[in-house]
Amino acid sequence: MTPTPYQPYEPELTAGIHGGYSEQRLAENRFLVRFHGNELTTRDRVEGYMLYRAAELTVQSGYDWFAIVDRQTEHEVQTYVHPDPFYRPWYGGQYGYWRPYWRYYRPGYGWNDWYPWRGDPFWASQIDVTTVESFEAVAEIVVGKGPMSTSEGHPFNARQVMSDLGPSIVLPHQKQK
Image (cartoon, rainbow, N blue to C red; front, side, top):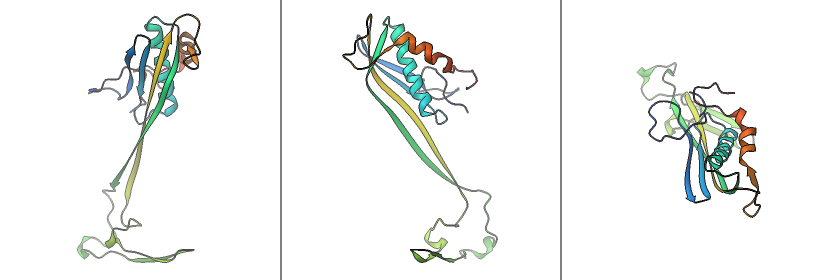
């Protein structure tokens, strides 16, 4: 699996890499631009691709500049816990519910007991914990022609953004940089 390349978002993707850009026209000169990355795509790359898509969309729509009116980056975290299928206690299964018992001392907390009967996770079994993060950047942009207007915020020259970010854009079937 590889990070999401710069590609259109296809929700029903059956082959290829999950994620990509999408946009929605809100008014003649306003768009909602999104870039959704998979779990291997960094926040920086997701935000950079969203900015590049805003610039590309501006030029494709016949405009010269864009300003970001509102933006946010959504961060999703999921944690999965999987028991190790190869973990077998040394005492074997013939002893039924017998499990070891430990007492241990923690400075400031005193003596503690550990019983696997209570579901204590401490040494109870080997587990694999996986945390998966993914990011989605969303921005509402306003686009314009001619001299850049500061009435909507900080404007970006769309062609300049495309020129600056273009070398870092990875298309599908291209090696990641």
